[in-house]
Every structure is written in structure tokens, then in C-alpha cells.
Image 1: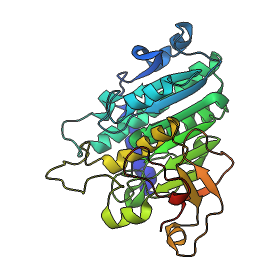
Image 2: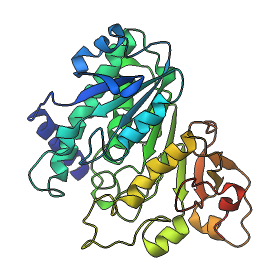
Image 3: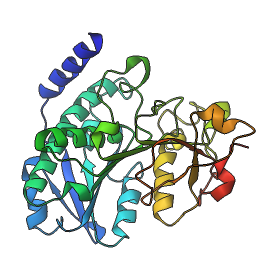
Image 4: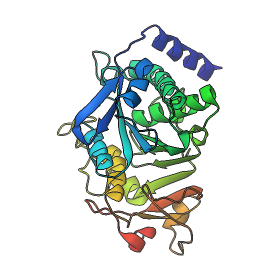
Length: 325
């Protein structure tokens, strides 16, 4: 009952603060050439040539306190643009993601705003679908709060159209309000798309620990449990590195860096399937089922996958990273 109450409360809060600030942005050729539209005008992306209905589409959403040039959003779009025959789009909800006067304490309001954004994003995709977009060519993804925005939008799109988006990728989906004791909001999970893969890199602090995808990756989980950070990230020190500053968020954002690294050609980000981290860490563990992070993942795989990585690019350790030892 309490979860139902809070979900309704957040929904009403979002509705009472309706905003058209967020935009769907698609790029053509370079980051300097883009078109931004409100969700009701999504068809303009097609008529203007910024969205080609014959191509596969990547849609990425930044996280809390982010924008199009931070948190790796520009890196993700630049990587997308370097690949042939892709529509490269981003969800620019910077005003909503930075809503409120007091950082961190404003997170519940930002979550409420994100609830509205994800529903309107689904409406935008519906308009694109009505104008020829094929859901089976859609791959939506997001970092932190953006993972829930894109994942929930994909689920809502299915409710609106009875069509299912091909893939949703969550890059360390945000924990507060979505996981643990205070999980009150709908989150990215297997119901969002035909295939959902999630990379968990900061499960002690900012990211979800619960596996909710068809495939869930847990990089460096054993050393992370000991140090609280991913390989190559600085120790937690809130005096030198304020919460969610680039250095403090290193582990949280490593999920995106791993994905981009794989997309740029690192084919050594291999992970071994295990029932849990204890099985993976056992001395007699033998890798049997292997998954690869990135665009080339086998979408028929299911389960939890574990790997060790390097502390800087290229992150992949190949077969050496398949065991915890």
C-alpha cells in the first residue's frame, strides 16, 4: 500500500509541474549538427532528415544533474556518429535533471520530473512509429537516472502501441527511489524491451544492486566490495571529491565507459555466467557461459555475468578477466 501511495504521489507531483523543457535531440554527421524537438513535434525529425526510418536507432539519456555535454553523453553520441547507418539521438532533460535549488535534497523532485519525461518520451516514440519508425531497430540506453527514463519509456511505448522496442541498456541504473528499502518507482527491467542488459558498477552507493535485466553484468565486484570503487577510480573522499563530482562518480560512470570502450573495438570485455558473486569468486569456478559487453552481445543469453577489468582503457582483460582470481 505504501509503495502504491508514493507512486501516485510522485505521479501527481509530476503532473502538477508539467513542463515542455526537455527535448529529443538527433544528430546528423557530427555533434555540431543537430535538431531538437518537443515530443509532440517528433515527426519533424523525420521530415527534416535527422531521423531515417530505414536505419537502426540509438537513444541515450543522461543522469541526475547531467546534460548533453556531461556524464559521457557527448562521448556516447560521438561514438554513435562514428558508426555507419545509425540514427543517433539523445534525451535532453537537463532542466528537469537539475530541477530544485538544493542538490541531493532535490532528488525526489527530479525523480518526479523524470516520471513525466519518460511518459512524454514514449509519446514521442509513438509518433515516430506512426511515421514509419520500426521498434525492432530501436536500442535505447541511459546512465543512472537516464537508464530508468529510457527503460520506463520503452515499457510505456509498448503499452501505448502494443509494439516492443528491441533493446534497452541500463548503465548503472540509479538506486535512490528505484532499489532497496526506498524502492518506490517503476524501474528498468525485463518488461521494458525484448532484451534488457544492465551494467552494475557502483552497487554500494549510487547504482542498483538488484539484477533486473535479461543479462546483468557485475564488473570487478569482488575488489569493489573491498575498496568501494572500481579499478582505477580514486578512493572515496567527500572532502577532496564532493558527492557526484566527476572523480567521486568515477565508479558510477564506469558503466558507460565500459560500454563505449566495447563499442570502439575492445572485444575483450568478456564476462562469465554465475549464480552469484560467491560462486564466481570460488577457487574452483570454471567459466562455461560467456557474454560480451557491448553491441555484439548475444541477446539469447540470460543471467548474471561477472568479470574483472583493467583500470583504464582498453578495459577488457579477455579470458584472464573471466575469473575473480
